[in-house]
Length: 295
Image (cartoon, rainbow, N blue to C red; front, side, top):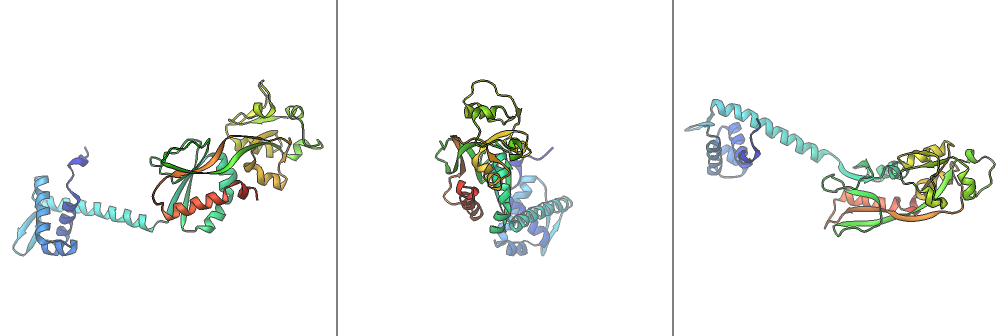
């Protein structure tokens, strides 16, 4: 059974005991800890009273660990070594910044730019959490989040709009073959439609009935199917800008549909942010905006 943390001895008492156990002398332990000899002796005495065990035999010219004291000293030394190693690893590790983004955003916008980000900040370790769930910045240990939202943020959060959600219908040019563009809504409905969890097709085509076609739980999967020539997908223009520019996809209808919510960069409002987190925030605000991703 684990000893209750509320009943553990004080850290100062354990430090005094550990130093005295190594030096076998209260004065030498006091010199190491930067306190008085009396303070070390008092801390060790308090520890013995707390435990109900004599840890040292006091001699005229030093100390000797009792049998229980020697066993306890070995375990306390091991515990302090673990604390020291953990601290060294923390100080030696690079600055870590955790960013939470929706899966489609991660796949289409963030991951293709990781090499650029790493080149700009080689000493920063970026950890990416791809999820649609809202981030709890404290519980989830998240520094920055990208979220699809209408922008009603509480006072404890700071946000910056990256881009509006402009929806376009796209397909592989191999699917359309010789069909002239742009297509009408009726012509598009004659093609295989690719649906994602957002279900934008009814609003896009002004249709009230159920529209047939394959359904995917993520936009990136629908876009992969579109790239493979399997049908027509709807996506935010920012996600397909590079594919449109390269000719891997074409916009099949002239119309687009701008809807809420939009994509925002969000973080906890603090008086001061860690430099690494501030650097990544600035990079995201600049390089993940619509103008940047459309270059």
